[in-house]
Picture 1 (spheres, rainbow, N blue to C red):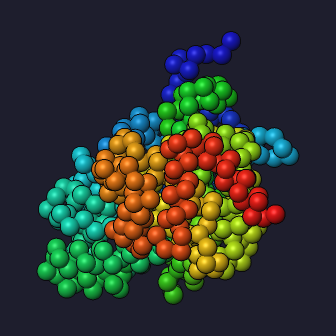
Picture 2 (picture 1 turned 90 degrees about the horizontal axis):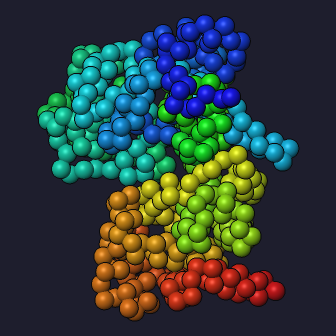
Picture 3 (picture 1 turned 180 degrees about the horizontal axis):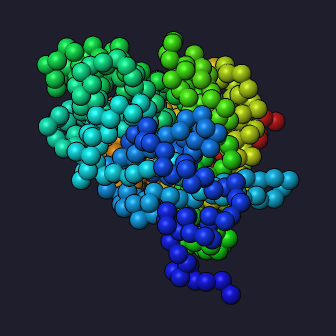
Amino acid sequence: MDRNVNERPRLSRALFRSPGFANRSDPSLPGAALLDLPERVVVFGTGVFVRGFVADIIDQANRMHSFDGRIVLVGSTGSGREEGLKAQDCLYTLVIRGATDGGAAERHRLIGSVSRALDAATDWETVLECARDPNHQLVFSNTTEVGIRLDEGDGPDLAPPRSFPGKLTRFLYERGSSLGWRSDPPLLVVPCELVDDNGDRLREIVLLLARRWYNDCAFTDWLETSVAFCNTLVDRIVAGVPRDADRAPIERALGYRDDMLTVCEPHRFLAIEVPDGLRNAFGFARLNPGVLLTRDVTPYRDRKLLLLNGAHTILTPLALLLGHDTVQAALQDTALGRFLRQVLFDETVPGLNVPGALEFAQDVLVRFANPAMHHALLDITLQQTTKMRARVVPSVVRTIERTGQPPAALALGFAAYLFLLRDGAALRTDDAARPIHELWKSELRMDVPAFVHACLSDRTVWGLDLTHAGFADAVTVHLTRIASAGARSALDAHLLESAEVAW
């Protein structure tokens, strides 16, 4: 009989080095020597994407002996993940799930690339010690789309500064000053947020803060000559920590308890825009499958951001209103599948002048429907409004520019998104949604056309006026149907109308 999960030993270095582990011949385990490699990377972020993407890339590079360095993770959200990692000596299991020959396949890999996990709120001085260590030559980040933005209330005397750019600026000042502003070794900053030109934007904010906070030309000169901020594109679906019912068979197979289990798909792609002369500094990319050093990440970014992330973002509100809880469950809904195909092939692919867009969109459907993944829709709603602006609005604009008509499927998804924002609970995970939620509390909600016009014309939310070319009218029709007859009726009506147009 299987031991109860609570009776299984918890993953730790001691367990890893016990005879039961040490005698295993298992390629999923890191060699014992890899757990004692020096620290060479600092990562701002401790969430599932960091664990399922960045740490996995470094782990594989270490296994191929093309990097030989470990990671210090820095968290700042109060999630408690740092304590969970510390309790396991920063070891955790990556569960890689993908479909093969119509069935589910699952592989496990014990990730040994993380050395320490720090909480910026309580360990800030230790974070600054990492900055002073010349061995740390790589800084990654994954702080969601809202992480790379200027916080006017931030300051260098806060411990830590409030924003990620603020923390990074203080970190870099500590590093540069401790090294006497030497240019060797160079420092590589590799942001993994899904933001256009993420490296350039982060660099602009850091330089602005450097000039505001420090009366030190040596610092700004050092930032401009000795720190490379790289634009990137990241692509992997990391579903997160498995639910209890899903966790039990995994831990049964592993033979130990792992509170930091992280589930992801096999697909993994990182494109890094490399400055001239620094290609050799990216040792972790050598021989590493799925890592591409390039002169321009733009085509890879547009393809992934609008097709994969845009599809996730626009599908989620409608799927939630229909009672689904995962992407995979939503794709089993025939009507939602037709809706998603319209979004991808009728309204997004035609506006993309990117090689391989059609093939990538076809692959997106396969990845979404992966029967071995359980990607929670609620996880995708984190900062949903910012995601809508970055991932969906460009496709709306491109469709209007290309056809002169509003995209009907995207308009339905937009209406579902607006309807979900009636609930103030959404504000806990969607900072940019406040203006729309305030409109829901106003008398304007009684006049659907006026309400939609007010929502879509708010340039502070969308960066532009979205009411033109009939898009507001299309959203109004769908929102009226959702409010009066429900999301299923609105979806059925849309599919019927789109079939009639095609006929």
